[in-house]
Length: 65
Image (cartoon, rainbow, N blue to C red):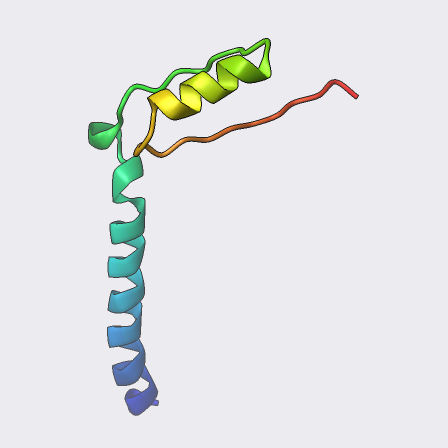
């Protein structure tokens, strides 16, 4: 029983460190203001994507159907 516990502690520490590292950008102190834009044409989308080259973007296409 002790060997299993001794082996699981480093694994738990590793998982906790990985979780902290991966979630760090979402912590309240690290937030960057983002904006939602309602585009009415493909040309507007094209312009925004070209304007934001090199930045991370999320594009959500929503439909009421």
